[in-house]
Image 1 (cartoon, rainbow, N blue to C red):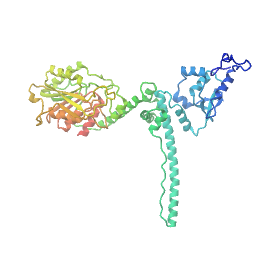
Image 2 (image 1 turned 30 degrees about the horizontal axis):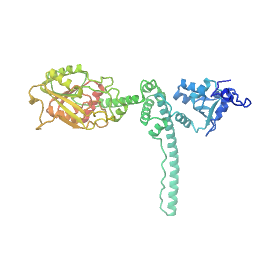
Image 3 (image 1 turned 180 degrees about the vertical axis):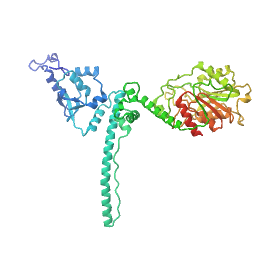
Length: 506
């Protein structure tokens, strides 16, 4: 007789009624038809044998998930309460794919169906996506939805272009005809203005239609475009796309990696064509090959407090490349003594050092420098005028960085180059903004801060070492202030970025 869909009426609830009028439970199929007829409201609902309906191939390709246990239990207990939407011509399921599968599983004799007519394949595909706009979706489904809408928009854009071309031809004919008539009649001709044809939908509108933020839609579209540029129709086999499909990466992470790869490729191409002359730029992770007492001064910023897994939104806003992927997020204190020892080895007597440092490492840095023979140790405070916002209002804004300075001499006259300044304060104040465009480093310093240090502890012509060079701000400033430099950086992408920056500085 088939599964009973919906709630059967209990005969015992009608005990008080006359046996003559007592309601008898109907056979399952007949009772279900009666219940489903009540679903007919704004649109006509027809009861159809589910075996006569076919799954839509694009619906299956995009969503592909099976009915979950909760949905199956609900349908088995209460029946299909929301009609399926199907194409009248092809009898394919546009909305209700999982409900249709459940009906086939439970061998329901009939399911409620609303028939729809569609103009073309694009109209049909758009309906499939729109019916699933606000359901819970995984990253793969979101990406395939974006691709579907993108293909629809492209097809409609081409159609609009063709319609616009034809309309333009007709408009030109009308224009020539009106102008000729005006000339023959001896009157002046004034062309009529026409309204512009509405173009493609904005990313925000598409995002609202998909139930997704426009930023995520943009990022998914960028991944798809790059994949199609590389593989064409086989775009789903692209490495980044597969990483999203297999849940190894989110759409945001994949888009960030794509952006980073593009920037690195751009930097690499630019660096290969550059000639930075005799600039001493070394791709290595130590300074063991630098001779003893060969460096006049050192200005550097060790890799402390580097955030791993930085938010994709922040990456996009700042246009930065996270070259620290996989690094420690905290400074390893046992490395400080080793660095200080090497700094003391390569620095000439009377040479100065300035190490940019976070507050929690200042005392450790000072102790490491003193224990390795440095004197005249001092601390400079750098105050940011544009600290990151503190939405919680529950703690102080982080708006300070510090520079630990020292000299390889007990003679305080060698510690600073006074520049004619009567009183040299240990305080810098200014913005931490780096500007936009090009490759940015998570630890990159503004030029003016490094310039402040270079002018106070070095002389023109001196050799300055930065063994944590990042993107080469120390080298850029030294170039501008007529100092020589040696830059050591372990990341290859940063080395290329240094060359690009130096070529512009020169």
